[in-house]
Image 1 (cartoon, one colour):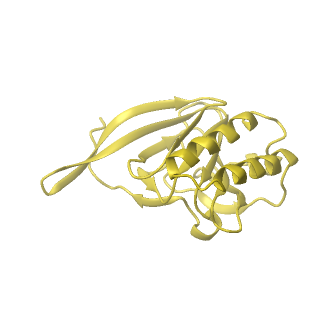
Image 2 (cartoon, one colour):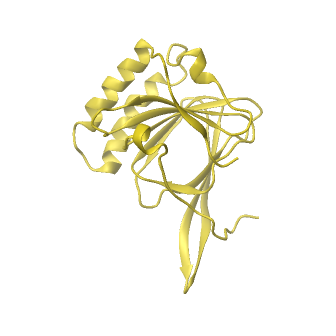
Length: 188
């Protein structure tokens, strides 16, 4: 499974999510470079992960065919978006990079990630795996392009839910993905 189900705008929000939006807005409004912004946003996200009052029941809904993306908030000025991704066992992304900085935090379950580096041997480009990461509940990571090529999947046996905060307007773009890579990899 390589693409999310259609973007769905959440019909309701929780008071905890509203506080998270306010906290993220304050970090983003500082106008710092993307890598520092991602770090600060991660600090704001971490205390909310795992809280039972963060998401509504509908925002936990998955899709049997592919991971589901629930748009929780898109800032009016386009400076950031907050998305809940719901992964059923085995669901994954394609290898991709992003249009902007990103912070992810695991709310429930675990999210597996393989990071890649793009290398060129003359006229032939390929991807080399550089790191495998398993993030559990409460774990936060962030990055900023370039160098943000990865694949993400639910390698567990239950549902996984993660919050992703992007430095872009996902309601307008539909996705945070800049490019999908269909190149040879060194994966076995």
